[in-house]
Amino acid sequence: MIGDQRGEHMTVSGWGRSTPVRAAVVRPESITQLREMPLESADIIPRGLGSSYGDAAQRSNGTVVDTTRCAASSWVDRSGGVIRVQAGATIGDLIDRYSPRGWFVPVSPGTRHVTVGGAVAADIHGKNHHRDGSFGGHVRSMRLRLADDTIV
View 1 (cartoon, one colour):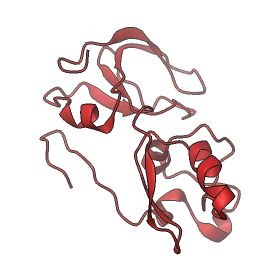
View 2 (cartoon, helix red, strand yellow):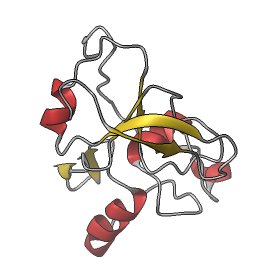
View 3 (cartoon, helix red, strand yellow):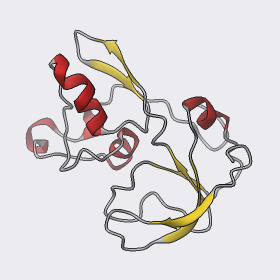
View 4 (tube, helix red, strand yellow):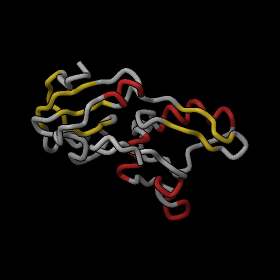
C-alpha cells in the first residue's frame, strides 16, 4: 500500500550482497503515485535496481521505495539529443529506445542494469570517463523532492 507506506517486508541488499537488511518495500506504479507518497518519516529511501556494490539504497527497518516503475523518457530537444527521464529508467532502456535513432548514452557503465536515478545519485562513470567525465556532467537539470515536500 502506497498511501501509508506499508509494503512487502523483504531482505534488501546491494549488488555485492555485503550487508543485507530487512525493510518494507513499496512499488509506486507511476510518477503520480510516487509524488503522492507522504514523506514525513525519515525512514524512507528511494531505490532503483540495487546495482550499487555497497549498501547505498537500503534502509534497515525502514521503507525502501522501488522507483523502477517510474521509467518514462521523452525528447526535449531531438536535434541536440536531450531527453527528459524519470528516475526508474535504466541505461538499457535508454540504449534500446534511442540508439536506433542515432543516439547513445554519454556515460555507459559496465552494465545496462542501472537506473538513471542511481546513475545520478552515485555519479557513475564508464570506460570513457577519462574523456567524457561522469554521468552528472551530462545532466542539464533535475527536480528533486525534499522531505518537507519542497521541489528543488
